[in-house]
Length: 88
View 1 (cartoon, helix red, strand yellow):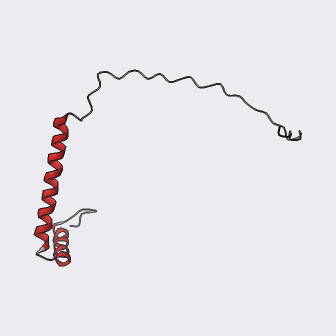
View 2 (cartoon, helix red, strand yellow):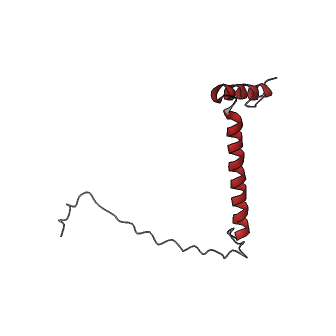
View 3 (cartoon, helix red, strand yellow):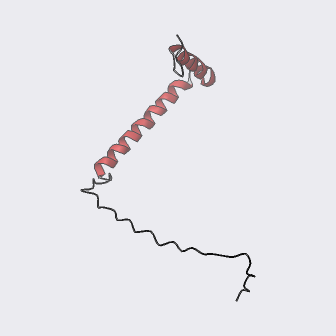
C-alpha cells in the first residue's frame, strides 16, 4: 500500500544507490566520518556554552506592560474650491 507523502523502505534504497553512484563507494565512509566529527564538535560546543552559563536566566515574574493611550485623532478638512496657498 502506498503511503501518501510517506517514505517507504524502497525509497531509502533508491537514495542509497544514487548516493553510491554519485560519490563512489570509497568517498562515502570518509564523508560519513567527517559528518560524525562535525556533529561531535557541535555537541561539545553546545555543552560548553551551557556550562559557561550563557543561557538566558529565567525571569522571576514578568512586569506588567503598560500600553499608552492612543493620541486623539485630528481630522483635517480640505475643500477643493480653495486655491492652493503659495509656499513661504
